[in-house]
Length: 132
Image (cartoon, rainbow, N blue to C red; front, side, top):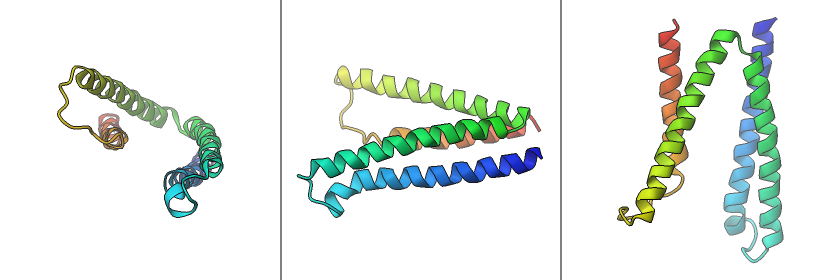
């Protein structure tokens, strides 16, 4: 029964992830590709939908964590904790370096979630190996 709940929670999380990524793409590219930029109402509506779907994604992720067995949950939480720490440390270090005029060129904000995503995958793999 545990495996069935885990599979269902994983599928639900995948659907919410696709929905959130789709609404994020709509909010990002809609003003340029689907409607004229002066239509701020459409842009704000797309952002509101993205926020609402993001809240649904968070709830789905919470249900996903609850469906995991204790060891999988521990591995996931360890990887998430390390990733959050990395995000805070790197993010605030960049802010401080930028404020001190030590940064010679601006870095696209998308670099941080990409770095965090790669770090999470590595931390999760290390946890799986460690608890084998």
